[in-house]
Image 1 (spheres, rainbow, N blue to C red):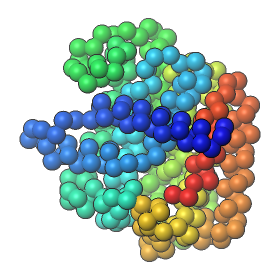
Image 2: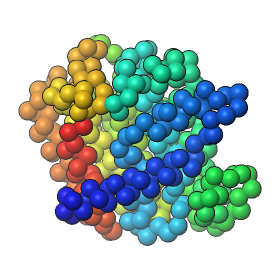
Image 3: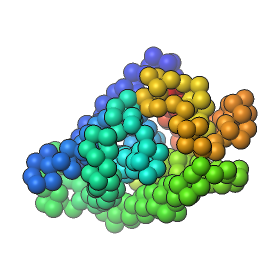
Image 4: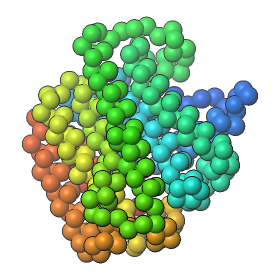
Length: 317
């Protein structure tokens, strides 16, 4: 895919993802107005939208029709944003900027930031579960969810249930939160390579694995392909995090949209501190190459998603 065509398609798809996300966000009114403002501020502060894009692409890739993937796209981004809000808190990384904007706890205070993260975590599952009662109209996602007509058959219902289970497992204590707990527990202490691999696979890789798997599951992809997508997600997630380590060393705050040098400031063990920049770059190439080779063996193909996986690993911000 030509670079210009890829960028045009990426912008088009990202606009669609943002439209879907906005349809699931709360109105900023009522006694919890400040909480709603903090939630919306965090959700609309930009971002690559990689995970919902992956859900949409694998859903299309295996013949998915209609808007069944959209509740999971919104839910995944909510859960991911929850993790960013909490990751930036003073008790964790204590960062002041995210995506070029002040972090949620700087804007709204630590207590509201914690609650905004909690709200997004639970709302993410609620959004995804609304797939059970979709009418197929985007307008219905803005209305009274309790009044939507149940329209999914038994097979589709089983796919939604399986996708929900993957979302819960990969975001919970056996996934993203489990990886984050290890990261927090050993903060400022030397890590073994095994511990670091665990953190990278679970804290970063788990939601990427889930995103690739969920779209395929909703579309009824073969089990062999779902298993391959999980392994691809692992390699992409670890490579993505190693690239993050590299950028923390070589990028600028202006380009990255968040503070650089925070790993050193927080005395964090990273792949770069263990092996150096050259070996880190080599490992990114190895993992990304293996992921693309595996992608090319899937029973269906999606040129845009293939290029997206390549680009995000090689990103400069």
